[in-house]
Length: 296
Image (cartoon, rainbow, N blue to C red; front, side, top):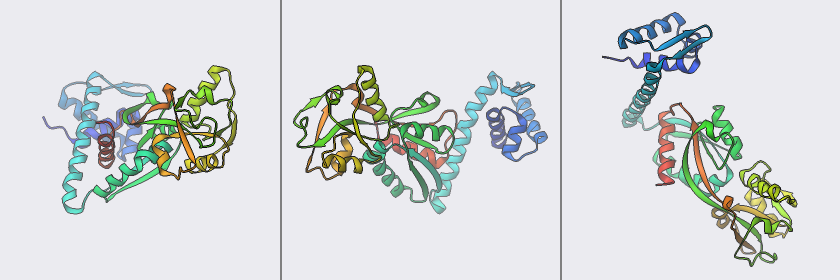
């Protein structure tokens, strides 16, 4: 039995689009020609692959099996083509990444540097966004790979563990809490805070604690970067929350960090891609690189 890769690609397109007409438009082929390709696949495999309905088509049980296998075969064929082409001109490709500030500052910048050194012909685009925006960009196909902490859209993605980090309190060394070795976030609420972006994962987690306790979080200023947070803390404007791994990147001679004993302060950074879609060869290489750089 010989399965034609182009026919498999067209069949996957039909299943994803939900109709032969929509798939034909997407794949730049006449609907009659595409329908003939599907009929040839069904004849070759001697089983129906699609259920034709008034509003479109959906795969049969055999069709669902074929879609899964076809995606694997198509990815392997694309990957093989890239590997063979590497001998002549080196790897090429374009991958769009969306990531939150914590991941970029602590881990992702270094991992992307290592990747580009090994694959200099693959172009990477990086957009910094809050975790909720990261997952939304992946779902809306504005990014191929997302790196985030927590998001309500997470169940809709294929998610992989990436790294772990810890949120700590940052303050001037003269602050009354600076000598405490560890404390609960609730213990800080009588003091003024320097808040990060209001829809960031860290701010959202802290606000949940405050709401559950029936208390109020006193925000003196809102900032959008760790540089600004450090500057404001250095001028004694309050307490800030930031990842422990990012703190050494800044001049901290006047500052102190205090650990939080709250469970939410120890976090897992995650990588998300669209569920059920095959990444490009370049995207797969980057994903594999990030996963091998993180949890082993």
